[in-house]
Image (cartoon, rainbow, N blue to C red; front, side):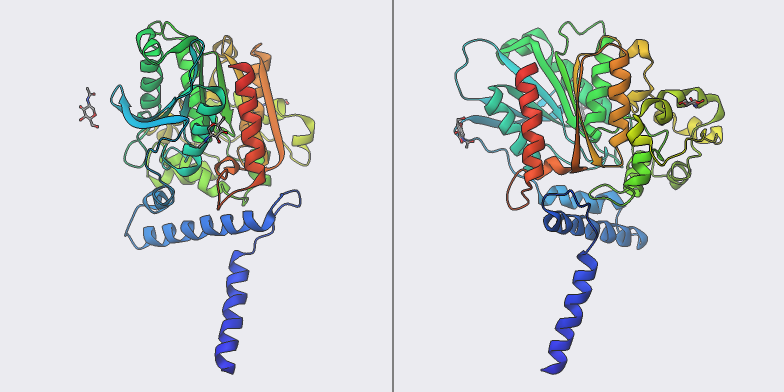
Length: 403
Ligand SMILES: *[C@@H]1O[C@H](CO)[C@@H](O)[C@H](O)[C@H]1NC(C)=O
Ligand SMILES: *[C@@H]1O[C@H](CO)[C@@H](O)[C@H](O)[C@H]1NC(C)=O
Ligand SMILES: *[C@@H]1O[C@H](CO)[C@@H](O)[C@H](O)[C@H]1NC(C)=O
């Protein structure tokens, strides 16, 4: 009996020690976030172990999270949900059942997951898309683009671009009763990256007759050039996206070759001949004073040209929308950007907001001081967080007012 109790006691201490990680004071529900973070960390450890043992690619193990969260397309009293294809790319389509006086608004959405993970059918996304459909009486298209490591850049971009372009055709919009002047693109994390890249590319595409009204970028990734921004330094191990996982995602978008990942981690992946691009992601010039505090800007070091020759994608603005010139940003649609304080990607969003404003694009920048990367996914029980509800409502209100 004594031994059993002692074992139980020791196990509890080990479990508590494993689960416990200090959380920022301003989180609303620190214990819940800690449990969620511990779950993600555990899957991360399993993924590393499985990869070391040669059983599975790291991302394949992480993909189990999305599989676990997957829900079939299920209609309810307000929304008809179906899985279909647009231009040979899978999409989950949400059509409102409510009558509409006139033409409807529409949102084309891209899920997050570091270009490697995620699915439009994940509970959190499915729930959010139903909310948008119902609240805005809008048509929502949630794209299931191809993922790495099986498919590399630009497959992800090409899929979402092709879905958007297909949908923006007048005959398709009219088939769904959508107003051609009221279409949005939106996405979170890597999906925000894709949304920003799509919005840029559409400006230059002479075949597209209908333009976007707005873009909404929810804690987007916007560049992989400088992975040591103040936000990367301050949030190196914050939930749910650590610096090392983000670097892994950035590299996997282009290759599983560990030399790119290692060069990115040490900031030696950008060759000398591309060093002019650094001014476009120069945090010293683009961040407000309060975010620069305690950090000293030093000019980036140049790496060898070999990686950039083999994997030129990481210098391509379809993968890094912050690399667009000021002239290329001009004319982009009205923009919503959500950034979270406790997020390695905070500065990407802040710098893009700043650059868009300088290019005379109307921007609403919502900076959530008490939130972390991925928070929006937790809009449904049992993994419900009040912060998710708040961020989601802010996003939906903005969409309702501006789309
Ligand atoms: C359907 O819409 C009504 C009115 O907006 C709402 O009260 C109800 O909760 C919705 N039902 C579902 C299943 O979302
Ligand atoms: C559609 O996608 C499938 C694979 O998913 C491919 O085999 C086929 O060639 C594609 N068709 C077109 C018209 O692009
Ligand atoms: C970054 O901006 C600072 C000014 O804030 C400037 O001194 C520095 O030369 C810039 N560096 C690059 C690489 O653009």
